[in-house]
Length: 369
Image (cartoon, helix red, strand yellow):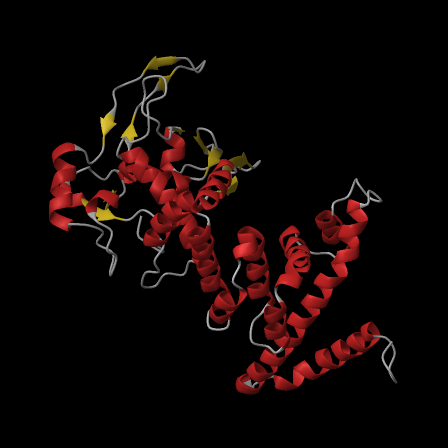
């Protein structure tokens, strides 16, 4: 009980009400708001510490088999409306707090955040008896949480490289990728990569996701486009293993009426995804192989014509030599990453000649067709 005002929780509720009401008064005053944010965060960190201490009875309850069907993490996640990671952090700090007396004092004084304390607790659990709190606490007070996390990883490796490598292998075994198609032909991605795999993907995506002049795409859209570009490049360069003796490729089926944009024409069909619009079709046929199929009135194939390569061989080499790369202003994509685009669209009768071609990165914002 707290004198004169009720329990600590009641006082905390009153303080939160007052803080919410006062927060509106800082509109238009960024410096004052920032000072207030620092103070609020310090108190929130202290509340996180109290939350962590309160998790101890929940853990004890589970170990006593009172609730064997519900782990402490799941119970906190469900009843406290939080993520599994946040619940695990609270429990982990509580379990190691007795080894971190100086770190607890630093948190209550506003010198480190709860994220730092969580990393200290996890490192203490990993290291065991050889844990040097003072050594890492000095770094925690100087570094951001993200940078301090790397410092903790170095500490773990320094003290037990074999266990570090074993945990690294366990992380690698958890990797996965799920691709789920939507009813309208879209694709949901869900997955996890270990440290090495994540570094490869992040490096490649970020290199291709730089913002360009007049680029209206969000950062998330740029990263999505970069991932698609990586896949397209692998297909174009024939680096993907053959399946059934044929290099993987995109296959689109469209009628002549669809290509000409005639009223009432059906949508084109992208194999593995479904119907696509004429605009999407025109983007995809800018640099591809075209095969003509003639059907009779019963839809039986009577002529497959022959495959016609667009901007291949000498014409593509000439474009690469002339343009050197994407001609879009300030775009630095080299020729091998570009599409050979028709100035007068192929579907409108444009020829596949050097004079009617140009190199463009296929995902440029607002680029001409």
